[in-house]
Length: 127
Image (cartoon, rainbow, N blue to C red; front, side, top):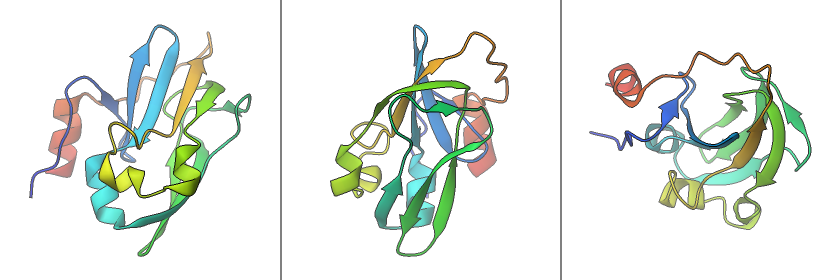
């Protein structure tokens, strides 16, 4: 089975994806991750204004099969949370790279996250 791995993103080994626009990183989970989890039934996310640290957990995703931690790709302040996921967690399954996004983080100046994978590196990891 092949999974969608958009070239315009970076990835974590823990299966989160990121896009960077100016100083803001958008975060979600990958097509591979949502497939492994199965039907997502609950997502716990931080609040706007919270601070996250690269490599630390920022939330939890629960499916009919498992509960998994979500990991921050960068350090900074949460500037937006996808509140639609609270009522429709299945958006993560339906559109993991679009409507299923989770949060936006304003990257802090001292962020040192260099553990992000390219699309090709992530594709190799899940192959």
